[in-house]
Amino acid sequence: MLFESGQKIVFIGDSITDTGRRGPSVPYGAGYVDQVRSFIMARYPERRLNFVNRGVNGDTTRNLLARWQTDVIAEQPDWLSLMIGINDVWRAFGGDAHQAVSLDEYAENLRHLIELTAVKTNARLILLTPYMIEPQRQNPMRAQMDRFGDVVKSVAGEASTLLVDTQQAFDDALRNTTSRDWANDKVHPNGPGHAVIALAFLRAAGFEL
Image (cartoon, rainbow, N blue to C red; front, top):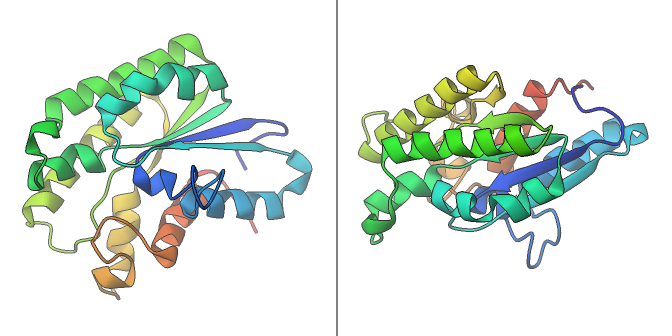
């Protein structure tokens, strides 16, 4: 398993990461972050790892840039898990299209976040692709989400970071299920949906039973 004794792992992103971590589910949220933490703590209790959730509902890459100093740099993590992009895309398909982030800006923002992290911390990064729990790849929002996911894959390759392909994890699950098995709105997962993300993360991190 990649995480070593005493290390701090910070998770940052949008509502998929937040999941009530500032409200009813303080401080880890009620989603994949808590599931990852629970399984790692149960399997590797001697490592005494420190988990921090810094997800915020509704965030785009623009929002992360505004709070990167306080929520990432100041934390000085050993590992940083970053999943962002769903709102960058989703806003273009709802009533807040003016807040949508273009593909080019998204790529620029993502690279800037990674550069800031490299310059101001010693953290190793884990990048998670954005996703849509939609089997029809020609669906306009799904198609755009795939383009944003390709940016994450490209940036992960450039920066030699660990990559978790959450879209592929849901695509694999959808071979035998429907979208509503994992989320009512194809974006915000239920418990099993968060487990899909958590399992993909744990596999990438080298978790062993």
